[in-house]
Image (cartoon, rainbow, N blue to C red; front, side, top):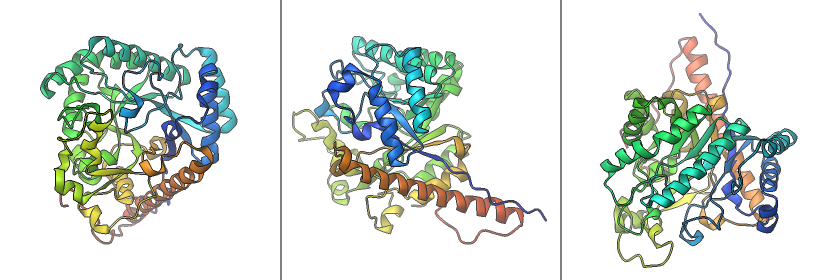
Length: 402
């Protein structure tokens, strides 16, 4: 009889730097752009994070979307008004070495299929700068969106993906990088009725897009950075999604995680359904986001209490089963897979370092304990017991049932 050792594999827990957009005062960071990265690495060390997901965005003076129109916060912690040079990379690597906090990847979350050709070209140019910075830092991946051309149908957007996104995927390949797509539907990107404004919003869409990428020799560059909050927003649950991918032969697609929950408001669903509010929203900037906020609110992991029935109704995230399902169903190495806390719980979105520090520290600790619990359960059940022929007790959550 074989005896397997108990050897759980834990994920690295990190945080997206948009959690505190102005950690470094704007007047300081505009004059000394890389100071913001140094400050965030030091802050992440205080939070007991293993790494940061370094947020890049067009500078507020260059952005095409007003800040008040953004529900999901972005941050240009990585300031790329000027190219990221080898000298800048050396300075950041020195901060990584001194803090012992890594960088999981660079995050640039924008609409790459924008209908305005000039705006689209501007975003494409910025993406190239992000890719160059990632290559110089040796982080291996860039995380972002695909987006949607609002003037065209979803099927026409597949053709836009082939035209617009294949070139940057080839650029990623030439730099030894992967592009990981977050699946948020981005309902607040449009004042119109569209709820799905990022066409890479669901597993069947990921597969369709990957097939296009594969046709052009960049299938290995297209991966998914899975965020369970967006699955909840669309009435899905993590285990069923992962099972679907495995059954379809695409269990390899997910290569990173955002840890952010979604607490569904049953009254909001009763009023508007899972498409959100699509009428009488008002003309102001940000009113487009009412399509989402009418039925849900983002959760910072560890800050919400859940009715157990909510798990079964897919109205919140079952964090323990999320981490178990990732290990049981996906083709990934947990020890190299980033688990990134993304803070978008509105009531705790404090832009005050002292007040936010214990909140983020508590959330990161919660995520770490959940992951370690899941890793321990997986190793015990699927390695130790299995090797000795001892069956696992009980049934657990099953896909396609809730």
